[in-house]
Image 1 (tube, rainbow, N blue to C red):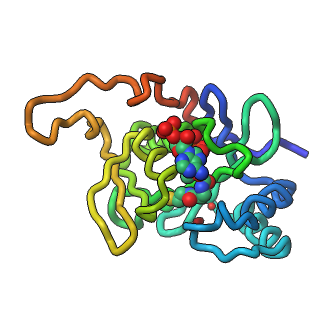
Image 2 (image 1 turned 120 degrees about the horizontal axis):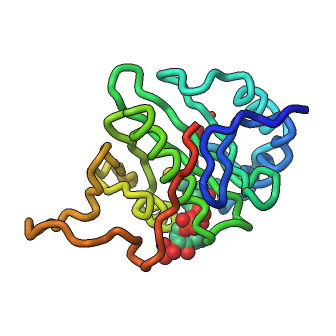
Length: 204
Ligand SMILES: CC(C)(COP(=O)(O)OP(=O)(O)OC[C@H]1O[C@@H](n2cnc3c(N)ncnc32)[C@H](O)[C@@H]1OP(=O)(O)O)[C@@H](O)C(=O)NCCC(=O)NCCS
């Protein structure tokens, strides 16, 4: 079988179209209550649901305005699905909404931020959208940290949800809220470099 089309590659990750044989791994992490905790689907999540969703992801056009495009996340070192990233281009505004999930056994390795940053760069620098946005529950600490590392900043609160935003061009995290000029933060808060895409090339 031919390899699914690759959309973006980073040092460690391949972000590509889904394939039908991703359904078993997709089912495993979607059915994990810890993964589903702040997400829009219910757990338990059946294998039949996974098969149907993955078939839809495979058949859907990429980046059709108004629809979610769900892309698979795979490691360069080992084939196989470890997570997914959902992208929805607004039909009129030059804006995309992002949603992202990593299987629990792969949490804490920086994959979430690396995938987010790569897709944000593709959408902002190559496709030239004006902004990307994401919604996260205010108690979802790992999501909040990943969003920050991928250069999204909070702009609004909607009930328990925080709206995050990254515009094209400027790294808003460098703005000093007291107006004393930009701080030098070329690297992440922890001193490590942020994940970045090297090759530009369905939700929640
Ligand atoms: C959000 C999510 C994708 C982050 O994935 P990840 O690959 O672990 O992300 P990162 O490695 O970039 O880690 C982000 C930070 O959260 C920390 N972290 C990881 N798991 C954590 C947990 N269970 N509780 C608290 N912090 C956690 C990491 O150590 C890292 O901290 P650091 O910034 O101090 O280094 C993943 O936790 C997930 O799939 N959660 C369920 C789905 C979800 O809620 N998606 C977000 C919807 S908007």
